[in-house]
Image (cartoon, rainbow, N blue to C red):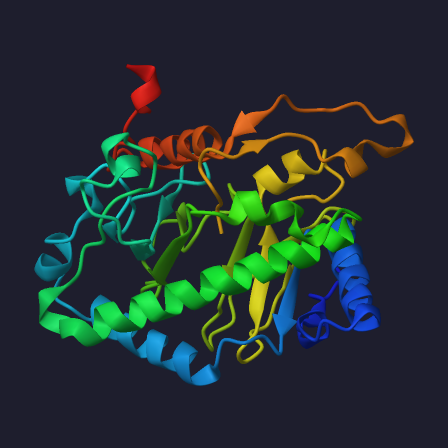
Length: 314
Protein backbone atom coordinates (compact mmCIF):
# COMPACT_ATOMS: atom_id res chain seq x y z
CA UNK A 1 0.00 0.00 0.00
CA UNK A 2 1.21 3.57 -0.58
CA UNK A 3 3.06 5.19 2.30
CA UNK A 4 1.30 8.03 4.12
CA UNK A 5 4.40 9.13 6.03
CA UNK A 6 5.91 12.61 5.81
CA UNK A 7 9.30 13.90 6.86
CA UNK A 8 9.14 15.52 10.34
CA UNK A 9 10.22 19.19 10.33
CA UNK A 10 11.55 20.42 13.68
CA UNK A 11 12.12 24.03 14.76
CA UNK A 12 15.70 23.87 16.04
CA UNK A 13 15.57 27.38 17.46
CA UNK A 14 13.74 25.84 20.44
CA UNK A 15 16.87 23.91 21.38
CA UNK A 16 19.17 26.85 20.65
CA UNK A 17 17.10 29.13 22.91
CA UNK A 18 18.48 27.41 26.01
CA UNK A 19 15.08 27.74 27.68
CA UNK A 20 14.42 24.45 29.46
CA UNK A 21 10.82 23.99 28.34
CA UNK A 22 11.65 24.72 24.69
CA UNK A 23 14.75 22.55 24.80
CA UNK A 24 12.69 19.68 26.18
CA UNK A 25 9.99 20.18 23.53
CA UNK A 26 12.61 19.97 20.78
CA UNK A 27 14.17 16.87 22.36
CA UNK A 28 10.80 15.13 22.54
CA UNK A 29 10.10 15.89 18.87
CA UNK A 30 13.53 14.50 17.96
CA UNK A 31 12.94 11.37 20.06
CA UNK A 32 9.65 10.68 18.31
CA UNK A 33 11.19 11.21 14.85
CA UNK A 34 14.19 8.97 15.58
CA UNK A 35 12.05 6.14 16.91
CA UNK A 36 9.52 6.30 14.07
CA UNK A 37 11.44 7.40 10.98
CA UNK A 38 15.17 7.39 11.80
CA UNK A 39 15.52 10.94 10.47
CA UNK A 40 14.04 14.44 10.62
CA UNK A 41 14.53 17.91 9.16
CA UNK A 42 15.60 21.00 11.10
CA UNK A 43 14.79 24.62 10.32
CA UNK A 44 15.72 27.88 12.10
CA UNK A 45 19.34 26.85 12.66
CA UNK A 46 22.34 29.25 12.57
CA UNK A 47 23.60 28.52 9.03
CA UNK A 48 22.42 31.32 6.77
CA UNK A 49 20.64 30.87 3.47
CA UNK A 50 23.26 33.21 1.96
CA UNK A 51 26.10 30.82 2.86
CA UNK A 52 24.14 27.82 1.60
CA UNK A 53 23.49 29.51 -1.77
CA UNK A 54 27.10 30.64 -2.03
CA UNK A 55 28.24 27.07 -1.35
CA UNK A 56 25.90 25.65 -3.99
CA UNK A 57 27.23 28.22 -6.48
CA UNK A 58 30.82 27.14 -5.84
CA UNK A 59 29.78 23.51 -6.09
CA UNK A 60 28.22 24.18 -9.51
CA UNK A 61 31.44 25.82 -10.68
CA UNK A 62 33.46 22.80 -9.62
CA UNK A 63 31.31 20.19 -11.34
CA UNK A 64 31.22 22.35 -14.49
CA UNK A 65 35.01 22.06 -14.83
CA UNK A 66 36.35 19.88 -17.67
CA UNK A 67 36.76 16.26 -16.60
CA UNK A 68 40.53 16.40 -17.02
CA UNK A 69 40.73 19.20 -14.43
CA UNK A 70 38.57 17.29 -11.96
CA UNK A 71 40.68 14.16 -12.47
CA UNK A 72 43.76 16.11 -11.40
CA UNK A 73 42.12 16.00 -7.94
CA UNK A 74 41.08 12.34 -8.14
CA UNK A 75 40.80 10.83 -4.67
CA UNK A 76 42.71 7.79 -5.97
CA UNK A 77 45.93 9.76 -5.51
CA UNK A 78 45.66 9.69 -1.69
CA UNK A 79 44.50 7.29 1.01
CA UNK A 80 42.79 9.84 3.27
CA UNK A 81 39.56 10.29 1.28
CA UNK A 82 40.02 13.76 -0.22
CA UNK A 83 39.20 15.08 -3.64
CA UNK A 84 37.15 14.13 -6.66
CA UNK A 85 35.11 10.92 -6.87
CA UNK A 86 34.45 9.79 -10.43
CA UNK A 87 31.06 8.71 -11.76
CA UNK A 88 30.56 5.08 -10.79
CA UNK A 89 33.07 5.27 -7.93
CA UNK A 90 30.73 3.74 -5.33
CA UNK A 91 28.29 0.85 -5.38
CA UNK A 92 25.62 0.66 -2.68
CA UNK A 93 23.33 -1.85 -4.40
CA UNK A 94 24.82 -5.08 -5.76
CA UNK A 95 24.83 -5.21 -9.55
CA UNK A 96 24.12 -1.49 -10.07
CA UNK A 97 26.14 1.40 -11.50
CA UNK A 98 25.85 4.84 -9.85
CA UNK A 99 25.76 7.96 -12.02
CA UNK A 100 26.71 10.55 -9.39
CA UNK A 101 30.05 12.30 -9.01
CA UNK A 102 31.38 13.82 -5.79
CA UNK A 103 34.03 15.92 -4.11
CA UNK A 104 35.25 15.40 -0.53
CA UNK A 105 36.34 18.18 1.83
CA UNK A 106 37.19 17.73 5.52
CA UNK A 107 39.38 19.27 8.22
CA UNK A 108 42.54 20.47 6.44
CA UNK A 109 45.38 18.70 8.22
CA UNK A 110 49.07 18.93 7.21
CA UNK A 111 50.96 15.76 6.30
CA UNK A 112 53.04 16.03 9.50
CA UNK A 113 49.96 16.06 11.75
CA UNK A 114 50.15 13.07 14.16
CA UNK A 115 46.79 11.71 13.02
CA UNK A 116 47.93 11.82 9.38
CA UNK A 117 51.28 10.20 10.19
CA UNK A 118 49.37 7.45 12.05
CA UNK A 119 47.14 6.97 8.97
CA UNK A 120 43.89 7.69 10.78
CA UNK A 121 41.10 7.16 8.29
CA UNK A 122 39.91 10.38 6.66
CA UNK A 123 42.72 12.53 8.08
CA UNK A 124 44.87 14.61 5.74
CA UNK A 125 45.08 17.76 3.61
CA UNK A 126 42.33 18.82 1.23
CA UNK A 127 42.79 19.05 -2.53
CA UNK A 128 41.75 22.29 -4.24
CA UNK A 129 41.11 23.22 -7.90
CA UNK A 130 43.58 25.99 -8.77
CA UNK A 131 41.35 27.35 -11.52
CA UNK A 132 38.60 28.32 -9.03
CA UNK A 133 40.94 30.40 -6.88
CA UNK A 134 40.77 31.06 -3.12
CA UNK A 135 37.02 31.76 -3.09
CA UNK A 136 36.23 28.07 -3.62
CA UNK A 137 38.50 26.95 -0.78
CA UNK A 138 37.37 29.69 1.61
CA UNK A 139 33.68 29.05 0.96
CA UNK A 140 34.06 25.29 1.41
CA UNK A 141 35.92 25.65 4.69
CA UNK A 142 33.52 28.28 6.04
CA UNK A 143 30.62 25.97 5.24
CA UNK A 144 32.33 22.87 6.66
CA UNK A 145 33.18 24.59 9.95
CA UNK A 146 29.63 25.87 10.40
CA UNK A 147 28.13 22.46 9.63
CA UNK A 148 30.47 20.82 12.16
CA UNK A 149 29.32 23.33 14.79
CA UNK A 150 25.67 22.65 13.94
CA UNK A 151 26.22 18.89 14.03
CA UNK A 152 27.62 19.20 17.56
CA UNK A 153 24.48 21.07 18.64
CA UNK A 154 22.29 18.41 17.02
CA UNK A 155 24.27 15.73 18.89
CA UNK A 156 23.62 17.54 22.17
CA UNK A 157 19.90 17.67 21.39
CA UNK A 158 19.99 13.94 20.62
CA UNK A 159 21.65 13.31 23.98
CA UNK A 160 18.77 15.03 25.79
CA UNK A 161 16.32 13.04 23.68
CA UNK A 162 18.07 9.90 24.93
CA UNK A 163 17.68 11.12 28.53
CA UNK A 164 21.41 11.48 29.09
CA UNK A 165 23.38 14.67 29.88
CA UNK A 166 23.64 17.17 27.04
CA UNK A 167 27.44 17.14 27.11
CA UNK A 168 27.75 13.34 27.13
CA UNK A 169 28.65 13.64 23.42
CA UNK A 170 31.43 16.22 23.83
CA UNK A 171 34.23 13.63 23.73
CA UNK A 172 32.74 12.12 20.57
CA UNK A 173 32.58 15.55 18.90
CA UNK A 174 36.19 16.45 19.72
CA UNK A 175 38.47 16.39 16.64
CA UNK A 176 35.68 15.01 14.46
CA UNK A 177 36.13 12.81 11.41
CA UNK A 178 33.56 14.87 9.53
CA UNK A 179 33.30 14.95 5.74
CA UNK A 180 31.57 17.54 3.60
CA UNK A 181 30.76 15.77 0.34
CA UNK A 182 29.48 17.70 -2.66
CA UNK A 183 27.31 15.58 -4.94
CA UNK A 184 26.28 16.11 -8.54
CA UNK A 185 23.70 13.97 -10.32
CA UNK A 186 24.06 14.30 -14.11
CA UNK A 187 20.76 14.11 -16.04
CA UNK A 188 19.65 10.55 -16.74
CA UNK A 189 19.53 9.44 -20.36
CA UNK A 190 16.57 7.48 -21.81
CA UNK A 191 19.18 4.99 -23.03
CA UNK A 192 20.58 4.47 -19.51
CA UNK A 193 20.83 0.80 -18.50
CA UNK A 194 18.17 -0.55 -16.14
CA UNK A 195 20.77 -1.12 -13.41
CA UNK A 196 21.84 2.54 -13.33
CA UNK A 197 21.10 4.47 -10.13
CA UNK A 198 21.71 8.09 -9.24
CA UNK A 199 22.52 6.92 -5.69
CA UNK A 200 21.75 3.36 -4.62
CA UNK A 201 19.44 2.68 -1.69
CA UNK A 202 21.48 2.59 1.50
CA UNK A 203 21.76 3.36 5.19
CA UNK A 204 24.38 5.92 6.20
CA UNK A 205 27.53 4.58 7.85
CA UNK A 206 28.25 6.98 10.67
CA UNK A 207 26.46 8.67 13.54
CA UNK A 208 24.53 11.43 11.78
CA UNK A 209 24.43 13.04 8.35
CA UNK A 210 23.27 16.61 7.74
CA UNK A 211 21.97 16.77 4.19
CA UNK A 212 21.24 20.05 2.44
CA UNK A 213 19.02 19.32 -0.55
CA UNK A 214 19.05 21.36 -3.74
CA UNK A 215 15.86 22.61 -5.34
CA UNK A 216 15.22 19.42 -7.32
CA UNK A 217 13.24 16.69 -5.49
CA UNK A 218 14.76 13.23 -5.38
CA UNK A 219 15.32 12.05 -1.81
CA UNK A 220 13.10 9.11 -0.83
CA UNK A 221 12.87 7.08 2.38
CA UNK A 222 11.69 3.50 2.74
CA UNK A 223 8.58 2.88 4.84
CA UNK A 224 8.86 -0.62 6.35
CA UNK A 225 5.21 -0.71 7.36
CA UNK A 226 3.81 0.22 3.94
CA UNK A 227 6.64 -1.47 2.02
CA UNK A 228 6.87 1.62 -0.14
CA UNK A 229 9.00 4.71 -0.66
CA UNK A 230 7.94 8.22 0.34
CA UNK A 231 9.50 11.44 -0.85
CA UNK A 232 11.20 14.13 1.23
CA UNK A 233 10.52 17.37 -0.69
CA UNK A 234 13.23 20.03 -0.29
CA UNK A 235 12.50 22.71 2.32
CA UNK A 236 14.54 25.85 1.64
CA UNK A 237 17.37 26.15 4.13
CA UNK A 238 16.47 22.97 6.03
CA UNK A 239 18.86 20.15 6.87
CA UNK A 240 17.76 16.55 6.71
CA UNK A 241 19.27 14.88 9.79
CA UNK A 242 19.73 11.20 9.11
CA UNK A 243 20.64 8.63 11.76
CA UNK A 244 23.44 6.34 10.62
CA UNK A 245 24.25 2.71 11.39
CA UNK A 246 26.69 3.68 14.13
CA UNK A 247 24.02 5.70 15.89
CA UNK A 248 21.67 2.72 15.83
CA UNK A 249 24.50 0.64 17.28
CA UNK A 250 25.30 3.26 19.92
CA UNK A 251 21.65 3.30 21.05
CA UNK A 252 21.18 -0.49 20.91
CA UNK A 253 18.71 0.04 18.02
CA UNK A 254 16.58 2.32 20.20
CA UNK A 255 17.00 4.86 17.39
CA UNK A 256 17.06 3.26 13.95
CA UNK A 257 19.22 4.26 11.02
CA UNK A 258 17.51 5.42 7.85
CA UNK A 259 29.02 13.96 10.88
CA UNK A 260 31.12 11.29 11.68
CA UNK A 261 32.93 11.81 14.96
CA UNK A 262 36.21 11.35 16.83
CA UNK A 263 37.85 8.33 15.11
CA UNK A 264 39.27 6.97 18.40
CA UNK A 265 35.94 7.21 20.20
CA UNK A 266 34.56 3.81 21.15
CA UNK A 267 30.92 3.24 20.30
CA UNK A 268 29.29 1.14 23.00
CA UNK A 269 25.73 0.93 24.19
CA UNK A 270 24.48 4.02 26.03
CA UNK A 271 23.29 3.04 29.50
CA UNK A 272 19.82 4.55 29.03
CA UNK A 273 19.32 2.29 25.99
CA UNK A 274 19.51 -0.89 28.07
CA UNK A 275 16.16 -0.17 29.66
CA UNK A 276 13.56 -2.86 30.30
CA UNK A 277 16.22 -5.53 30.64
CA UNK A 278 17.41 -5.27 27.04
CA UNK A 279 20.75 -6.90 26.41
CA UNK A 280 23.56 -5.05 24.65
CA UNK A 281 23.26 -6.17 21.01
CA UNK A 282 26.63 -5.03 19.68
CA UNK A 283 30.21 -5.27 20.87
CA UNK A 284 32.06 -1.96 21.31
CA UNK A 285 33.79 -0.66 18.18
CA UNK A 286 35.98 2.36 17.37
CA UNK A 287 34.44 4.92 15.01
CA UNK A 288 37.45 4.70 12.69
CA UNK A 289 37.22 0.91 12.34
CA UNK A 290 33.49 0.96 11.59
CA UNK A 291 33.67 3.74 9.01
CA UNK A 292 36.75 2.35 7.27
CA UNK A 293 35.07 -1.05 6.85
CA UNK A 294 31.92 0.46 5.33
CA UNK A 295 33.93 2.62 2.93
CA UNK A 296 35.86 -0.48 1.84
CA UNK A 297 32.59 -2.24 1.04
CA UNK A 298 31.09 0.43 -1.24
CA UNK A 299 34.31 1.51 -2.95
CA UNK A 300 35.79 -1.96 -3.46
CA UNK A 301 32.47 -3.18 -4.88
CA UNK A 302 32.64 -0.56 -7.64
CA UNK A 303 36.24 -1.53 -8.40
CA UNK A 304 37.48 2.03 -9.02
CA UNK A 305 39.02 3.02 -5.69
CA UNK A 306 40.80 1.16 -2.90
CA UNK A 307 40.46 2.06 0.76
CA UNK A 308 43.74 1.82 2.68
CA UNK A 309 44.10 -0.65 5.51
CA UNK A 310 44.44 0.64 9.04
CA UNK A 311 47.97 1.19 10.27
CA UNK A 312 46.99 -1.14 13.13
CA UNK A 313 46.66 -3.96 10.58
CA UNK A 314 50.37 -3.87 9.74
